[in-house]
Image (cartoon, rainbow, N blue to C red; front, side, top):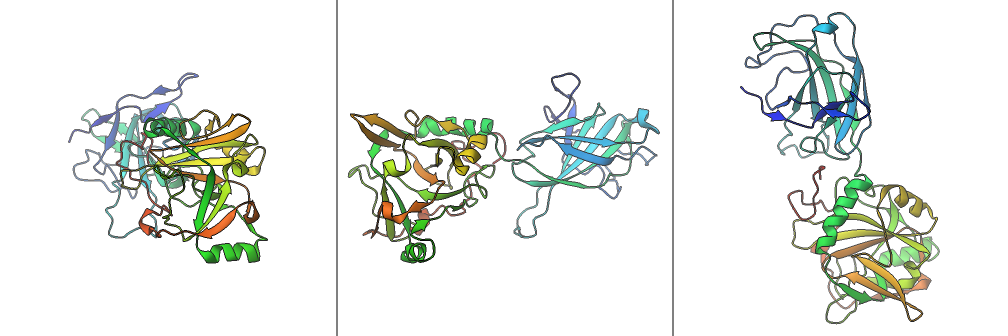
Length: 376
């Protein structure tokens, strides 16, 4: 069987700049399992003694790449022509047992100086746990391989999206944001019990909580950033917030300038959809110098509050004027506590549309509008 060729997945630094190793192969068939058992069709000769990789080190981990190195005994080291790398997603005990399992990835690379970089969004996803093991191999004149035993198995986890990746998402979101509509209030819907609990147990102040795992799998804010979700979308015909909500029949409304003003910074957090025609953009508002601001400054692209495609705050005739994008649904996270006395709580007259809830919603990985080529 001829192995399909791939480029740009494994590289090794041969100069200050890394060069991509050519002639890399990705085998969908099993060359040799970690117990040393060979497939009848694998073309691997009887095992001869080659140095077994040990003390494997994984470094420079990103959302779609990592560097790998190891130590080897010097005996027969000069006979090594290739490395076999066995890369697998770590099995999740809570995963659906009926779901089709991921095909293990077998990477074959020419023996090069270590460390080398493994890179490829087609087999690496962000924020995902993997196991990796390595063999050394010597290619024979007849095309067969002599291989070492497998190394020990190492576990590691890929990283979140970087600012570079988030900027790619940002640029995609800008394309469909649409024209800007004027608004004057942020609002947050919850059940009556939520607001009763805030008054009784938190001194009337809504507290930030850790964001759930909805949206892009590689988003650096999921499961890490603490904040309070607000909406600001308005109905086109009235210019006011809609009377329906998926989150509860009671709504807290607060004047926009209380949360978004020259003393706050604005950040882009995510862009996603849930197998629907409409898309969501997550923005973060953080008071300047706050813990939330410091968190976002290191991880998220900062937006110009006066000039961006999603949410703006501008001064006109001595007053702050606010606009939001019409063609995306904005989810705004405010990173500090908010006292209920700064706004009003009232029951809405519309319906509770549970189908529109984004709680822990998974992003559609096939959508070309809101995905980038570094995993999902």
